[in-house]
Image (cartoon, rainbow, N blue to C red; front, side, top):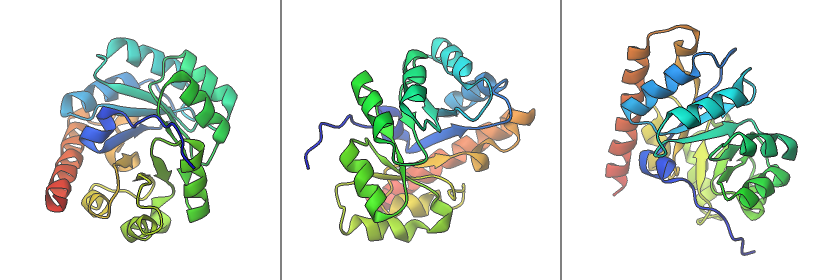
Length: 218
């Protein structure tokens, strides 16, 4: 089945890291975003499960340069998808296969990254028009799972989230991941007032791990 799909953003493609901002409040997301961008991470997912997420998307999109891709995560239905598009999101991420969400994103001309786990779900997400399929939860399997999926699905691009740590990023990239989604292991306690300098160090470590792994695979 041929689908006119929207390519993943250059920010995700170039850095290999999507930072996932999820917290009890979005109050510190602007500070976190500035820190991540300064460190080189330019693909930022703001999850709708974080109170104040829509306002944060609007504000951060306005403040940061156009070279930064700010998107919405945990988008589970078309109504939410339309709301985040109106807020100016650069992409949508879902924890599951949601064709209606992918359809709204495609109509808006932005990438969609639906979540999938089984081979059936992975193929369904791709056929729906996914730009990249989000493998979730990665913690339930491991990097070898991507290699297994690449056998029958060599053209499907996969990005693991949930179960990706600063120490195993390289394993995922070498296994064939198009990039990784990093939440808690990257943010740490930054959203609760933690050290932004430490956040910058973790971001630099994540990007270095991707670069090293891509060099190994070259």
